[in-house]
Image: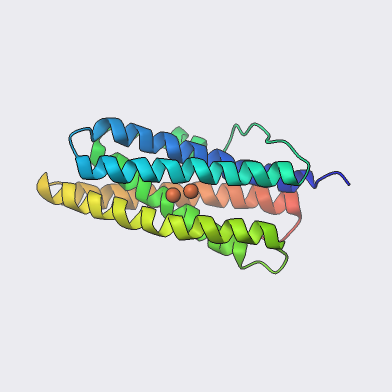
Length: 183
Ligand SMILES: [Fe+2]
Ligand SMILES: [Fe+2]
């Protein structure tokens, strides 16, 4: 039986978001070269995001599909609205992106029609996303306090949360249309 193309596309979106997440972390790795504590955590963090991308890729192939190219994924849509340049901005954006990813995976896992294999992946990635948020948020607070940028950090968080909300609303509408459920 041919795999449901909507599911292959959905998992390709997840895969795309994980790969973009890894790319954001690699930018942070470069910007935080003088922070050995951050280097250690970023190394594990990148390893986990790429592992998440692999888990979705593997699920796609198990279903008999192939990953599809995603041109309008979550981070691409964010990128059309804002380009963070400062370290504090990048950290704030990372927190917001990680929070979205956690919320999305939890929401998906709570659906009544999730097959056991997909549920297993959702459980595994959810566990990782929790510590991702915690350490990046801690680092953001630490650096903001050191550099007198607490206000800017709060402002950027608010701005990115707004952008995230807009982007996620667009994506939910698109998904609801594809799957034919009420948004
Ligand atoms: Fe992830
Ligand atoms: Fe993550």
